Image 1 (cartoon, helix red, strand yellow):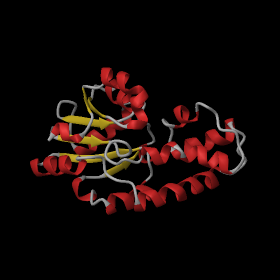
Image 2 (cartoon, one colour; image 1 turned 135 degrees about the vertical axis):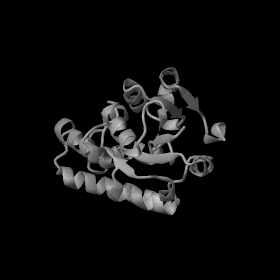
Image 3 (spheres, helix red, strand yellow; image 1 turned 45 degrees about the vertical axis):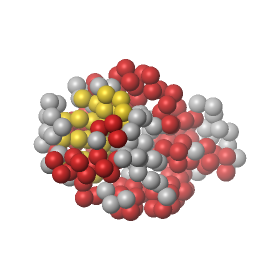
Image 4 (tube, helix red, strand yellow; image 1 turned 180 degrees about the vertical axis):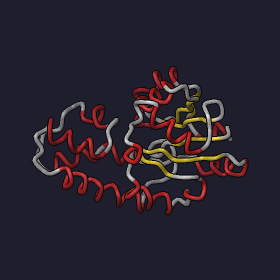
Length: 210
């Protein structure tokens, strides 16, 4: 591996449990019905898209700005104070950093609330850059966003590996011809068999790569 594109949530940091319940908490706190398929719908969306979904499909009358602000306030505290690294992630980053591997983060999250976690966990030094889907105007269900990150790293399909945990992102990267390492996460466990069949490699822990 000469270049690595890392997802953040569920891949490098154990933040998915926080995200899984934020939408439900918002709807319940404001007296709106929570659909049974809520998580399966919003897991592929940016925060702004989720807010719009709440407004257009679930009858939420709050503005998009108010919805996103309330959710961000909730998750920002967790990013700033409690969300941990995935086991052995730091050791793997150290190993690749010392080898001279160029690494970046490509995330559907926003820099405003992930920055505190990256600073607290001392991760920034490992990465050439942090790139958000919002900045690119593309999402991870399609390969364009991965190509943008790869080109920015100066890599190509032969020497670049994508690390992801979610099925839609694994599939998006594979559509573009990328080598994909899938990282196990409890929140994506229901899709694990499909993920394993699509990804080039499936790891239960970064310890597998040390």
